[in-house]
Image (cartoon, rainbow, N blue to C red; front, top):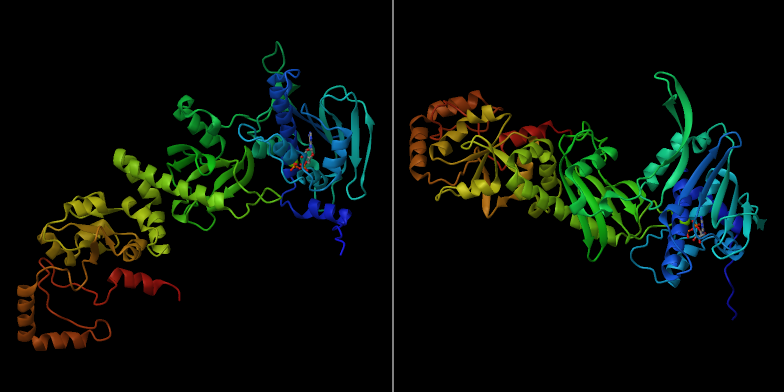
Length: 559
Ligand code: ADP
Ligand code: MG
């Protein structure tokens, strides 16, 4: 049987392309700039391999011009350009990527950032334009050509005058409709911020004429409007620079420029990984807690870049919830993006990166704990609760990552201590790690149940956060030492003698205890003598696995 070729209804396909793959219209600019950057990369590559072409960085740039009156936005570049055939093939055939072919043909690997691969980005222009004109002159050609299309109706190609090698993309911006304004795409300030957002680290300058107010010459108060060409992008991303050349200030500036926070970072890490997956990352631990941190509004995530172009504002898959306070960015050439470049496909690489980031954040926090205790305690005050939630909500599965980062207030040290420090200090005959749960350290200091342990010189950890005891229940033990609440029946202390005494008192005062139990019926399950108390006449204790504090929390929870 003869095989038949699939046919596509190109009008409908184009319509799909234009209207369903992107969530934000503004990304058309990212796509067109990425194409221009690819085109310049290609001419640069050619120059490296052909001595007849010289490449002087200054001659290569991308220019954006907005003409409000005629509703025209023009993006031009000094890249490699397109021949007539290339216009036909690359812009006339959906899902045909000249850039992808170029990469393959030239076996380009490292050092080039060629971004294109799917052959659809160009058509995103039709989200904001009802007509697109492309005028291009290819390297080594005498003549230029003009490609023009209004979208679904097809396209025309004809000869055109163009002096310099390169490409101009002319967008006839759509008129405003009742529910949508397209004026943004003709507004220099909006355009500048879109460039900053997505294309800040494109390697070639993206220029635009900006109107600014300046003092008139010779005048001290009179301003005049002048037009100045501005380079909008910062080009060399901080994370590509050599670490040894960067200062603390550079990292702090990046933090505020990127609006990661209004504070200064407490700590930053710069990772350049070249192993199984190549990526660069700059991560920050904020000094202050974001005002909405412990609310539903807070969104965790890192900025994700693919070859310097922003793909995602907050990629949440890169951070576990318990490290949700980490800010920063990741850039990798090795991501498998989906066609809109807004989402990732089966993210094996992403998972690998996330794992590395998790390990790195942990080791950075441990080093902070070891070398800069004061700042670590500050960090823990802000974000410690999140770490404890992490242990609790993962059913203790992440305890290897988190347990060494925990801190609690100690009854004997009168300050925050780690579990490791506690265990180091444990008395020889001490079986358990003791804790007392309550409202505040002051109150816990006065807790009757602690007296016996304190008498023995044992240290007690104070749990004043609701989540503390829940987290510890998930941990179960630390360095093979189990946790034990001070209000638990069995404190693991040799109580034989005390128990005898207790039994005796109970026997001798049988009637009294029965009377008290009856009088408190419904409020307590039993009344019994205790030899644990030293300075207090009475205390409440829990019989079950849960401490009184935990029972309180559980009964306050909505069912
Ligand atoms: P992709 O960039 O994924 O390849 P596009 O739809 O964005 O897909 O572009 C299709 C092709 O058109 C590119 O691969 C490239 O060959 C060509 N092209 C687009 N814009 C330009 C440009 N400014 N200069 C040179 N070639 C371009
Ligand atoms: Mg593209």
